[in-house]
Image (cartoon, rainbow over all chains, first blue to last red; front, side, top):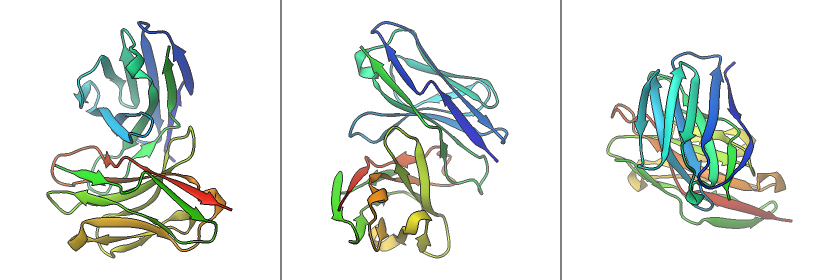
Length: 114
Length: 115
């Protein structure tokens, strides 16, 4: 069966520090991968998605970036965190092809920028 | 373009009462629709989905939803609320065959269940 791992679960970082969140998927190949951010009371905002290695689409301009160095690995990064980057970050995957409809989510990372 | 509107950011019901969470969507083509549930500090879990076929879909934990094309709605219901249903619920949409690769989510509805 497929599983998705996301770490760390919680993170407290000072303003201006770098960020690296990692997500890996097991049990499937060539998934679509996603990073969402959830701010309090604001639902889920799509940040990045990837349909293959090295292919990243950005949904919103910001100081975050994403990379996909391997088929089932998706990394969210920042060189310098802002207070506004605080939130709950969720990684998700979705299969390719018309029969694959829903997305499956990791357990999330609670990021607090202080 | 696709979008989702969830009416009511907070809904409170008594244990044993009907649960109704509202979702309306906008899509240029017939969409796929989803309801997810999120417990505190956890990821999202799929409750149910509509892709094609029967418009009344049943999901886990006794929830069901009905796709109404004429009303562009996909409301979530449960006949009798349980304390364990207290969580945040998200409606989501994707328009297949448009090249859109990601689900679009509503802003969520927090369900409280009173004893």
